[in-house]
Length: 175
Image (cartoon, rainbow, N blue to C red):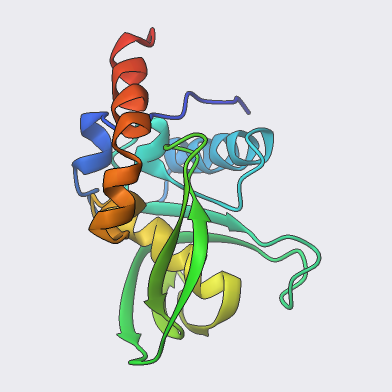
């Protein structure tokens, strides 16, 4: 296992939709291990493959112990949101790819997500609370969307200088 570099806001890979995984192989298994280690080291609850430079439609999630779904870890291969509730909820979000920035994002309260596990078994999960929010946030990533694109324009304007700084620092980071 290895801790991988997390790409920051402004990196092209974060705007590029990821490709479906056709077959889980050693590369995929190694990537999953690295993603969990990277996420844990960065103190995150979710991580998408493109955040660590991979173009695979892959998400890992680890819900903290104090949440309703205690200590749940998920590896989601080719996840897709199949249904969203009309009821929405606003809550603060942050992102490992946008360090130091937190903002309120409104998202559907409930989602139904289909995904495969590493053994190829299909799951259909209805989620709410933190799990629903993290699933939506990470699936946005593999679809090429960063959470700051979901915040209201007036708040985004307030964050302009900080977002520009992160983009500039991302350009200057050593690969």
